[in-house]
Image (tube, helix red, strand yellow):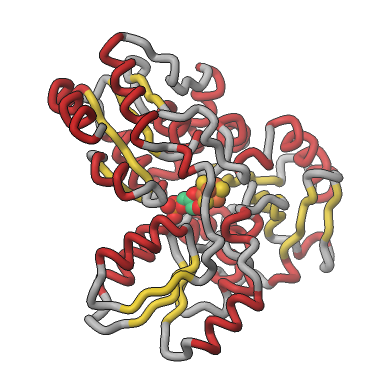
Length: 343
Ligand code: 13P
Ligand code: SF4
């Protein structure tokens, strides 16, 4: 299968671009033209005007983002159309409009600036674009949220409450100055005067990171006191605030790679990436914070469906294409371009 994929790659040359997120398996990563975090992959997709076909080995929102950022003629495909991101699915346009109405009643009309994590549906990025808002990735969230918080409005951060909370605290916003919007019950919670609310956090989360428990963290800390704990900012505040470092997948990789030989790390993120860190850094001691940290959706991409996608492209069959409708893409690109300008 690997040899067949390599042959197709050779035949298609620069017409084909295979992108892979860091959470993909080793065999997929080895076949990719570019591997990265969400920010890097969005930038690579945007910069490549040459490839006719971009095969995204990642999850649905990543392929959508690539489709929005590429030319109309470029075709973006996802090897497994069911590879979604459950956190992205926690926010939809209809509920976001309902939330906006509620927040405008509370904080004033025209006074809400929506900012979405890139792990969101295209319709949420479009919602942000229409309202002058933007997008963040875990790699640029501090810089972009800093900008958003300085715009004199109440920021609505979707859909990941953990990335929003962790980043806002780093930027000096007190926990008491953040509200929480429960999107299932249309309820808003805050403990301060409404004039003091700086950011409203949508109640979404990534189950892979959110459910790393305090007990797991404490037992690993206790068992390995000389290890540095580095986590992804999708972890809960209770974990992220105690860790020795937090950042995007690219940040985590660089922290480990650049550390002196003999360094010891406990990593709180998806298992495929941690396993690769262990393999690629034999001079360091690396443990996973929680062995349950597996993203089922990222793992839906495999050699079989990658090969099938490429074979179908050669036959002129694009049934795995991910296409964002024109109006949604037009609004979403405003939010994405603002992110690219700011980061
Ligand atoms: P990164 O942008 O840090 O790679 O994160 C993407 C993601 O889905 C993490 O769960
Ligand atoms: Fe979504 Fe979490 Fe999987 Fe990332 S790890 S794709 S946020 S479910």
